[in-house]
Amino acid sequence: MTAPVLDPNHPLTGVAGLGAFKSLHDRKGRKLNLIAAAFFALLGVGIAVVGIGFGLYEVMSFGSSRWDNVLPGVILAIVIGGLLFAVGAWSLFTSFRDWKLTVGLYEHGVGVVTNAGLQMVRWDQVNAIYQQVTRHYTNGVYTGTTHRYTLIDTDGKKHILDDRLKDVEALGNAVQDGVNNALFPRYAQAINSGQRVDFGPLGLDRQQIYAGKKSLPWSEIKAIKIERGNIAIKKEGGWFNWSAVTVPQVPNFWVFYALIRNFATVE
Image 1 (cartoon, rainbow, N blue to C red):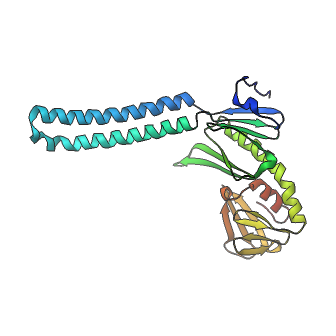
Image 2 (image 1 turned 60 degrees about the vertical axis):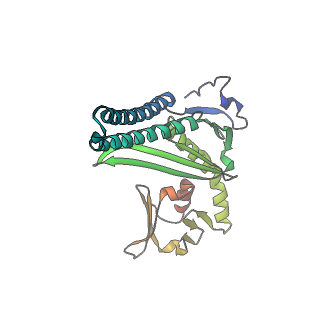
C-alpha cells in the first residue's frame, strides 16, 4: 500500500531519522466530538435554567406557598443539567487536549504529534511496550474491541496509542513488530549469557521461570496456557495454576512469548 503524501505544513514533516514513511493515523472524529461535547454542555445549562426559571415563575405567579411543590422539580433539573454539563465540559476539555493528536508510522519508529509538539520515538529507544486489546460482549453478543498500546521510551516517557486514532489496530501491530524486533536480540543475548530477564510480574532465565518471589524449573512446567488475555502457568502434578497473570501486565509480551517457547510448551 502506498503511503500517503503529507501536506508541506503538516507537523510530521519535521520527522527525521526514522526511515521511510509508511502510514498516517489521525485522531478520529475531531469535529464530531467537539459538536457532541458542546451540545451536551449547552443542553445541561438549558435544562438547569428552565428548571430554575419554572420554579421562579410559579413562586412569583402564585406565591411562596408553591415553592414546596416545585422545589423537587427544580432540584432534579439542576442535578440532571449539572451532570450533562459536566459530561459536555469534560468532553470539550479532552477534545481540545487531544486536538492535534496524530501519529505517523515509519520504518524505524513513530512520530507522535500532540498539543505539546512533535516527538520522535525510534524502536531502539523503547524500553517497553504494553498491549491491552479487549473484546467486549453484552449478553454473549460481541459489541466491539478496544485497543491501548503504551510505549515507554528510554527517558521514561509514556506514549499512548488507543482508539482515539484511526486504524489503531494496524498501527499497534506494526509498532509491536518494530519494538519487539529491536528488543528481542537484547533479551536473547542476556539469557544466553546466564542473566535473568524480567517482564513485569514474570521473569525467566535458562534454568527457571519466576513469578514474584516464587520460581519454578522449566522441567517442572507442564504447560503455559495463554487464552483470552490470561497467562496461566501449570506445574506438573499440580491441580491449580502455579501462577496466573494477564497479558496487559506483561511488558514486551511478544518477546516474552518468543522466549518461553524455547523452554516450555505454550498452548
